Image 1 (tube, rainbow, N blue to C red):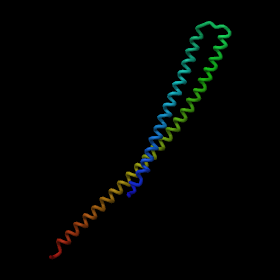
Image 2 (image 1 turned 45 degrees about the vertical axis):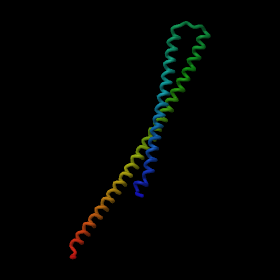
Image 3 (image 1 turned 60 degrees about the vertical axis):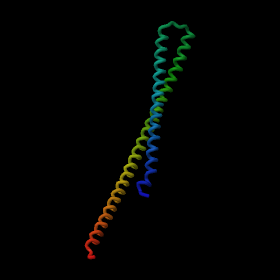
Image 4 (image 1 turned 90 degrees about the vertical axis):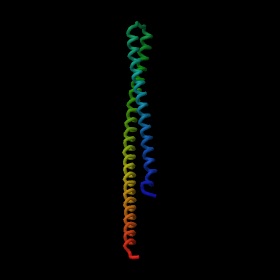
Length: 146
């Protein structure tokens, strides 16, 4: 078995690892989009709530409930903001891992191609030598007196 054929499973594994890393990047990107979308919705809801509440009169209990709700909403926004940071870091790690896998797969692919090129060159040279030897044998046989 040739060297390039022996390396094919290694190349396939590297390509599969690259695909899996790419899928992980896609999942991380979707998670980031979801987290950012939720953060945007929370902020919009808080702004809308503030706008609506500023337009009406309120008694003491309602104001107390209003401030408590705003406090919980602000806490939720802070937590979601932290979640966005965590998910962004995960995306960056996944992207770095994918880049490494891509470089690894490309390097292995180049090595396999180089092995295959060398094998073809050797086979071509061997075939040429054999053809030259046959030609020489024919010439020698044709020159011999009969």
